[in-house]
Length: 460
Image (cartoon, rainbow, N blue to C red; front, side, top):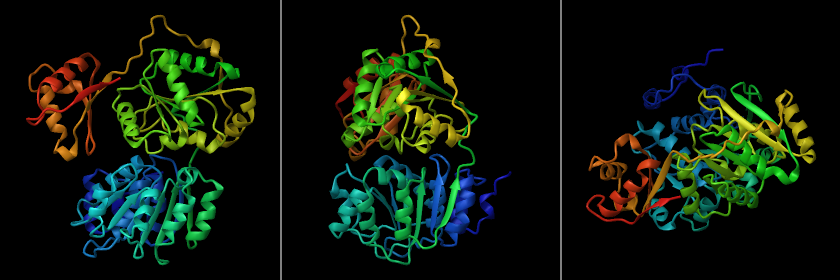
């Protein structure tokens, strides 16, 4: 079945221009099914997995009716994590680039209140934020939502998992009754329906899950004894040697323990869980997404908003309690037409969970034996890149070109040996190839960036 082109939609001309400029030609299934309802002002519940194009769907919906000449907050998008909020804000900004004077503000925890308060002196048209920080601004009376016309709860299921139910309801109580409310969710727990019943009017219910079985993913299940999980996990990584691996654990304590265990085997593993400070979280995500760490051990909640395009493998350290979550986890490995690998460990006591997954995906699990796993002698699995930490960021007027220029000016390091450059307000991260990491450190330590000296170190 051919997808419909965006030009078939009755959109404002500026929006059609930015859609064309971004190279969006035909709609994804979630966009095709939700946009006609969003554009006609209906409330909506949509279930669609991450990477399905739902952000562009609700972004187009809210921008189509935005009045840039009216200076009040017209749209609010709530997200579970700062990373997801940043991604959503970036997508909305890209689509709004042709609508002059559109003001968007992100309000997330882990960032100082001062700059946010300054930006709120004039009401932005669009707010994208996390529930905790949005609520804090409401309590300070620095954020006014009574005229909000579009409310979007993105990844609503994870916001409920993270205990944001009461915050969300309190925020919604500050908005007017005439608003359009959309709930986008990767899974569909009972809590979603409860929120919908309270805050939506006759919502259109859309489920975009054509199949729970992806032919692009090789999925294998390994039965193990309870006390050999860590050992078999190491064997899986050593046998398959994926360039990037996301290991899912069910608890945050498990995450740290598993990452530490893998490091004992001389593997570069990092943990991502709710106990990390925002600074540490940014650092971990930057290292993993820039290929400076090959293994990320995370909980489901922590992994939401993870922006990694090419993920070679997903490993379930133990099976999820929810088969829907399992499908969502493994769906991260076969993005953009690439082949994926999903490996899962389970014990006798998890047989019920395995059965639930089989029923949900409509196909039997393929069981593999741990005896087939081979650990090569002298195994060396180093990530291809190393991240250089620079103690300066956007607030120091630093730009990616400044760092690239400083590293390549002497001709000792070529531009293609430098990977992702990521800037935050006060710090920056530069990925460089392993073989030039020490040289890059020396160049940045001894030389100057934009005529100034900054503290630099390698992240290992």
